[in-house]
Length: 319
Image (cartoon, rainbow, N blue to C red; front, side, top):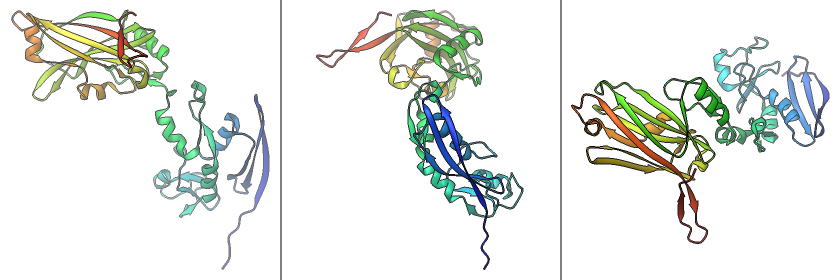
């Protein structure tokens, strides 16, 4: 039985970095496929990124995880794309077969790489196979635009999104921790699944999104108001808010914790986490002949302060 072999040439690369010089060595076969064999020196952004590129699938450009496949010439791709290219190597067009690139899988297992959001401030370094899970939950990952009136795909940090909401979505901006809004609709019996209003409030050095909308729930429409915090969930728990709607000597109140904008608008709405007003009650609050919706929603936001002696939360109502 003949044994197929590949000739390889070795090379050592030096990567200068502001914090020092780092090296890694690799081998390259005559077909041009590179395989890292050793990583020398501390893990850094520059060196890790270069090695990380070897683990990037040439088809989908996502990171490759076992099983990593290779052709007879050593070109690699991920298992998902192996099916998509109909078992043909996208680089040399040779048949792929069922060859696993165990060497690259072992290299990936030994790697420690920085979070891909390191340039946004994340200092963490993770083993390759646990890096992806961290990045899906990283506190430094960008936020999605909280505007619910359209499928906006804008992402960024909070200051950027505040400017984006004001300039691109023309959202009303208010300073202060209390609000008093009136919502009017001429034909409340015709309800579309659309957000009526988004208002942004700035208080306590933070930004909050007040949503008010109508949507179909069961056989009839309902009206819902809720607050979202422009930041992470852990910090959102430091705040509370209340909403109140009423008329004709009656009122409904809601008190809760604002949800982080990490949770999508739809997720918050579908969990019924807010002030919900049935149509008949909304028309009752509106008064008159009940042919026009006129709702006044008031509310306030406060920051919870923990008493060191009792462990109780004391509301701080000053902004």
